[in-house]
Image 1 (cartoon, helix red, strand yellow):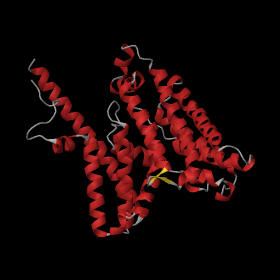
Image 2 (cartoon, rainbow, N blue to C red):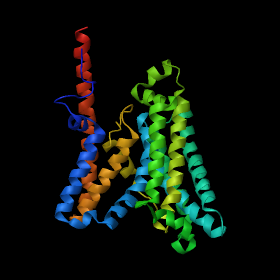
Image 3 (tube, rainbow, N blue to C red):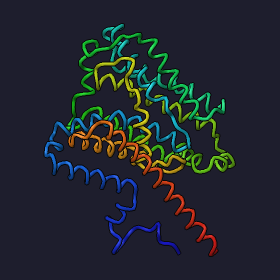
Length: 339
C-alpha cells in the first residue's frame, strides 16, 4: 500500500511537508531571497520598502486570481492588460465628468465594463470555438487600439481624482496597504470557491480531462464562459484600483502586464496544461517575482536582465511541471502493472 499521500511523521516532519508542497517551496524561496538581499542591503526590509513591495505586487496578484481560473481549464487570457487600461481610464473620466460621483459606483462601473469585455472573449471562445490564445491575442490588440482612439492623447492626473479614492492605493490598515487587504479578501474567496464549491471542482475537472468532464455531465462551454467573465471582471476591478494606486492614467496604462501575470501564475504552480494548482500558490508566485525584481533593483541589476530572469523563471516552472507530470505518469504505470 502506498504511503505517499499520508501525513508526514517521525523522520518526515513539517519541514519535509513544506519542501514537498509547491506553496511551501515558494515560501522558502521568498524567505531565502529576503534574507540574502537584507544581508547585502539592510534597507530592503525597512517599513517603507515592505509597503512598496506589497503595493507593487497587489495589482498583479489581483489579476492572478482571474488568470488562475482560466489556466486551470487549459486556457489563457492575454487581453487582461488592455481591459485594465480601458477601465482605468474609464474610472478617471467618470471622476472628471461627474464630480462628486461615489467611488464605490465608479468601481462597480469598472467591474461591469470588465465583465462586458470579458464577455466578448467568452462568446468567441466558448461558443465560437475559437482557441483562447488566438481570441485573447486578437482582443488584446483590439481593446488596446480602441483605448488609444478613445484616450486620444489625453491623460487622467491625480488632481482629477478624489483624495478618498487615491487613499485606497496609498493608505494602510494595521500596517498593511488597503490595496493588499482587498487582494487578500478576494484570495480567500477564490481559494474557498475553487476548493469547496462544485463550480471550482468543475474548473479543475475540465483542465484535467475535457472529454471526461463532458461525459461527467459538465457544461464545458458554460464553464469556459464563466471563467472568462470572471477574468474580465477582475481586470475591471484592477483597472479602477490601478487609478487609485498610481493616480495617473494614459493610453499605455498596464501595457505588457499580462506577461507578468501569466508568469506569476505558472511559477506559482498552476500548470499551463490545466487541472493543477491553487490561487494561494499563484499569488505566492506573484510575490516571489516581486521580491526577485526588488532584489535585482537593490543590487542595481539592469532592467534588461530583470526581464530575462523573469522569462527564465517561467521556462523553469514549465519544465518542472512537465518533469513532475512525467514522473507521476511513470508511477501510475508501475502501479497498474502490479495490479
